[in-house]
Image 1 (cartoon, rainbow, N blue to C red):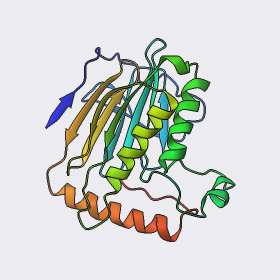
Image 2: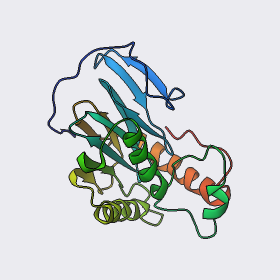
Image 3: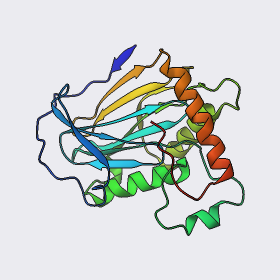
Image 4: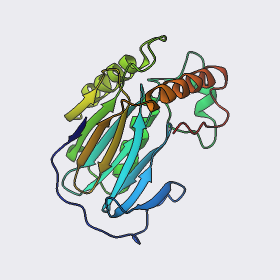
Length: 218
């Protein structure tokens, strides 16, 4: 099933540079959409002020798409867990190059990057996606992620204008920051099982080695 949230058509420019700080992101030309596309992996976030697409795949993870509607600046994050495990915060906070793989950091880093790019906090609007229960044998991490991001938005006074969360299916997410348009597609094929197994390995990695290295999940 594919859901498209309202927005305007995208333009085409394969040469516009990325914002400072995002030069390392995976960026490529997508002939299907005739635009540059950036792939966001778990623990990453990306902000754009141009006509391009930001994509990811979500299982129990959650992504927030945050946008300044007036200035057409927006971005997406992708986090796996709501917050660091007990006793981890101080050590990880001092780590160089720490990724925003926890919601408690992913939201702050994404918002700060949008503001640094010229956005205004009072103009931000948020859409949230993911949090599926794709690992039936494990604690419902997706539900915890959803509860976290909803509580965060309420506490910070940020308006939630759209969401597609919960259920049991992974999702493919495509976000167009310039227009605010979002396309969501549920994944119901054999890839579901592959995604669930990969998420389980990633969760185990976080528990055993929460600071060192990153895992390319998708």
